[in-house]
Length: 340
Image 1: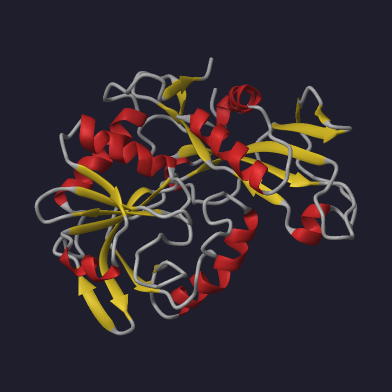
Image 2: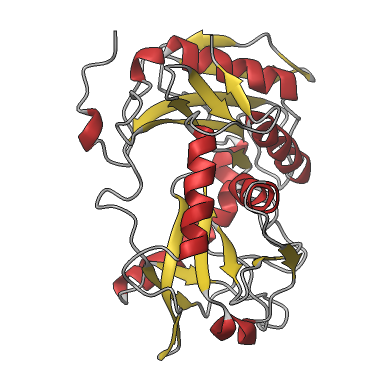
């Protein structure tokens, strides 16, 4: 019995679902956690998250596979990445096994909101944690709340996958030894002006260069880059400031082990970009967004793959990874977690 939603016309927006998971950290330990129907949060005006942005989050999806199972994709990596984010922000770690248990509980409790196979829609899961106790001096909070909600979302590309036009940004995404490698809310807050400015100028995303020298490619505001060389190699930028995308890591594995491609994870000089055959942005929401043109302050770098469709190898990577997620292609061991 599914929820009464028009699955084929869902946008990428919040839809309230019946249940979410909540656990509180107090007196040095997490409580046992609970499912709740209450979607409102009440906290002090002086809460650490409101004063000093002490918060981190994750994003993953649940799917209905071709054979009717409800599954999540590599949630263990989301749990590990959130552990790293919490440590960097002086927040208590929410244990990996409890994170996975919360995913299972939230998806199972809201299973009527998992879109059917073939609809193009998925159930987006948002775990997050924040400092909830009062903080007026600049220091970590003493109490925290971990929450996880889910919302059905439509396909990222409602009109079908199409290449986008991006620009080289004059803004820096992260400091050289800052927080670019963790999923902190503060990273996304500082990216908002840059993305709004890009949209106002007719571009769909920003290409951020390394803040120290501005000669190497890093990532966009919310996705890692992948490049395909003219001789068919997959290249992904290496940097301590890049968020370790689970989608990117999965694409690299698929490229090597399913498609037999050579994979290079290395520093990528911006001056190399003009010589690549294909370019894409990868992340949970869209899996891969193909890039057709990169605008460098008025000078256009036109990828040979063009503006009409995904490049040939990018399309193979996209089809293979989504095939694994949807149960049409056998997954590597441990990648798929079934929700009972």
